[in-house]
Image (cartoon, rainbow, N blue to C red; front, side):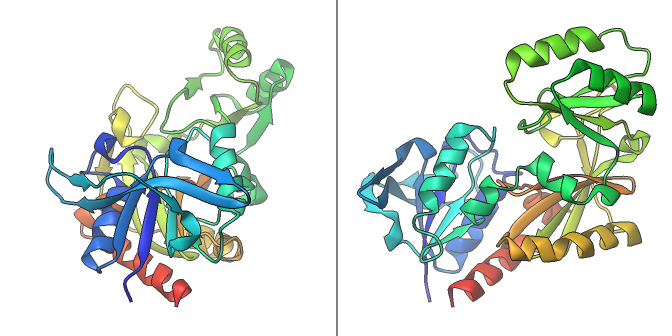
Length: 313
């Protein structure tokens, strides 16, 4: 049965269709006959216990430079939708959190993917700490003395914003780097939240693997290799994608976290693994679907809609 699907996203005109997962999910939904509607988070409203958005009917095409058409905006009660895809990119700030509170009003009568309450309660760099034996040594703090002691114990470290995304603000500091104090001063001025410090993993030079799970099951992966003079593997900052297979350790990681993902209603999740260690669990708007398929892997967009349709049924 066709579904009415509202996509809460950064504006569709801004996406790079070659690698955008939201676009891939929209293409597959349209192929199945589902009716797509588009809106940005600033169009979300709540009044008298009801949640509205000014949505535009959307059609999509896999054509660079001509990839979408939008209808006129219509104020719509989102409880009339069958599915809402919560897909805007972080930062995971109070604006993002507020949208989860509002969408929680209509879920699960309208299926919101991923579950907004659990998205709010599972920040990507904090959720992962529920599995300390699967991740590298990690510190969350604003205390410079704690960071200094952590570096003395572990040597090279990575320092990054706790609620950042896309590789922004990630620094690799060697054990003798004299910039640590200045960097921490900058971080404390820029961010009110604690920041995250992790043991540097040399295996990142061989790649940072993105593994995608649907309803708690691993369905595909892509390896992202950082550029020669960068410690970040994110593809939009120069990382190179390559085909890969899951190792026994990576399958162990997925099997361990799978039940927690299903319990929280996370249909689409992307985890990051460097060497033998998981560094993040991405639940807001995980990416990588198009890259996996491009390198001969599973059609994850189809698997995603299979899961969504089963839950709606």
